[in-house]
Amino acid sequence: MDAIIQSIKIRYYIRLINKYSQKSNKAVLGLDRNMYFQKYCYYQDKLRMLQDRQVSGREL
Image (cartoon, rainbow, N blue to C red):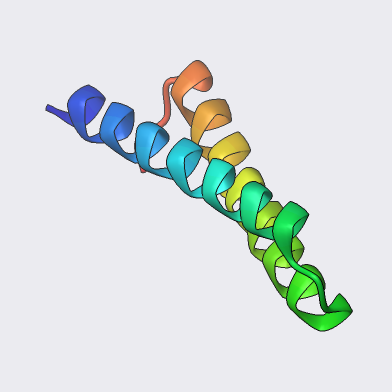
């Protein structure tokens, strides 16, 4: 069950990463672009931590 929840979270974070990457590339104003890029980095870090926990076998 935990593996299913982790895979759902991973897919969710990947979807958010793609969303904010596209929004950052399309943003015209510098502040909007910075905000979307920060969200992109945040979700990328969360995904990386989740994948590291999955590889090491630890629970969330």
